[in-house]
Image 1 (tube, rainbow, N blue to C red):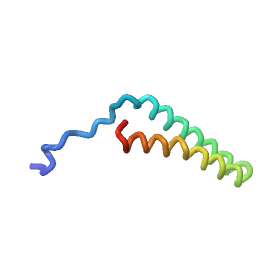
Image 2 (cartoon, rainbow, N blue to C red):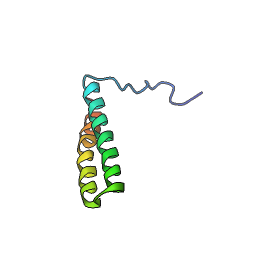
Image 3 (tube, rainbow, N blue to C red):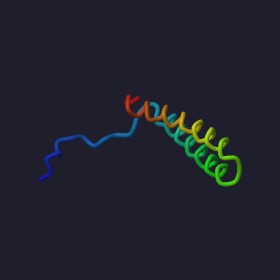
Length: 68
């Protein structure tokens, strides 16, 4: 028998689930654009794009950790 059988499964539901979904979409779009920019154009600008794409991800992670 699993010793953790009494624990409830983690629920990823919450009032801000849709906001978190959009923040993840914004992060993924920025990451793809940043990587494409890095491979095809100026590397310094690509780094700024990638750093900017991380901001929505940090917000999303904070919402998830705070369980909002």
